[in-house]
Image 1 (cartoon, rainbow, N blue to C red):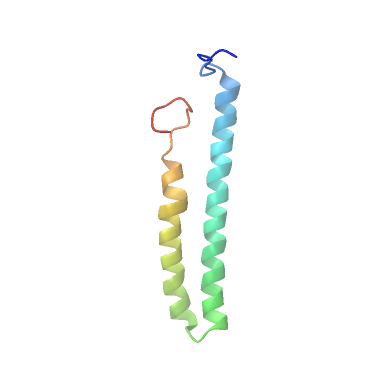
Image 2 (cartoon, one colour):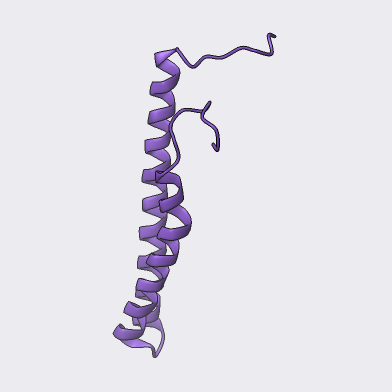
Length: 85
């Protein structure tokens, strides 16, 4: 195998990378939504925290999850051959 092999000009690889990136973002949004809903509803109905306690924790879970899960991945360049990937 050639060490200088580069498939940057192949459109099907870029389309595959864009599809994978979109699926990854969608999956991260779904995980964030489920984590927020589960924590909010659990605190609301299963603990004495009530609605306001569940709402506050839901907002915190959403904000932290967005910063960790979604925000960083959305800013990644699609090209695999870009520096900093």
